[in-house]
Length: 526
Image 1 (spheres, rainbow, N blue to C red):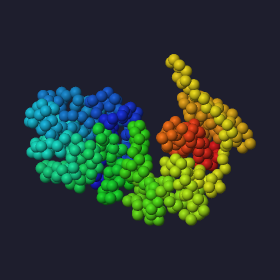
Image 2 (image 1 turned 90 degrees about the vertical axis):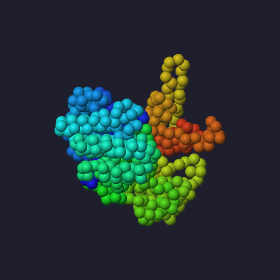
Image 3 (image 1 turned 120 degrees about the horizontal axis):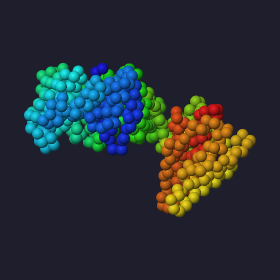
Image 4 (image 1 turned 30 degrees about the horizontal axis):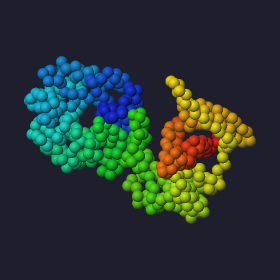
């Protein structure tokens, strides 16, 4: 491979605010990164906490096919030998074939943070690398704060690299630890490092942080200046503002610059695997994230939608399928008939932009959006609307009546809600009731309980998100609200909406659409 990747989601990524991996979470991420084909996985710091020590005891036994593990830790402590340093001992005990060792390259840190001499810092680097090499491990030296150090004292920053190189380091990784460097400074630092080293073939790497929003830009600058090893986190999260997002870096590297860094089938799975990692981390993937975000290939403007439907590259810089994604035409009052027709063709392939249903629906869409409806994030509800306009929808059920009540007892009792619903299905009626933590939860439970006798597959459906937006806030408590409900059956996810002055009624409409959409997708069968 032209560019070697190291993913540090489980080490640097785990330092991101709000992220707390369990051991099982970390094992799941390792498996996902191995499926993608990331060569190196920095799985944690076994010397810093018991959880990472336990992780490595399990992770080294995983039957990984494409990835190898790397453990992360500091150089020996001042005034100790590596063999007598407990941190070094724990690194070796991890069983990881490669060890990432970080050392100070900025004389400010040597002087003010470690409070040791420059000579002692160089000895710590050299002795640690040499000792770990004697133990038969690959050693990656992370030159912490290299670019800040190179700016303040270039001669000493370069000396730290040479100390690691002469001791036998297998990779020298230049770190923009504070994330405060511009691409030009990164490129200059990389070139200076390459010129200074007596081993020109020794691979140089880059580890960038995103504090100025430039982690990707400086990583590309480093590659163009000669780095062949790149570190980052797949979804971009990490300390402070995060790390270079490999999910955005890899496609550009392969599709735009012609480098190779994943197995042949890897790129087509990058969207899927990135979502898996984000889900395990319990982090919402930003919709605007390049290549893999839900908005990466979404088109809303009428001219954009019309153009991309006629010629893909007119408004898409790459084919979405190359990264395992797909185009989304967002339905709105600015979308135009081409966008509406494209969506209608999912139901009837013969529909054109001049089809009566497309013309009528485009106008209806504008009227509905003026009243507070917004279909761009609720494609399932729009599909149901389209089916009705095309005469292709026969309701699977009808709600004859429903009632929702909430109780708010005093004392320590928890408030709860009750719902009762009566439905009509294929000539039969069914009555059901349910209790919930809130009125919508109760209504959802009652409705599905009433329908499950007719449609057992609804047992697998659950709500994953519920959002309420006040549309006309000036009306105070009489304001109209828009409710968005996201549902899943464990395999697919879809979003529906309802609009009303009554939040329960708006929720009822979104719930009904959610169930109807699921039954249509299943063909009404179990």
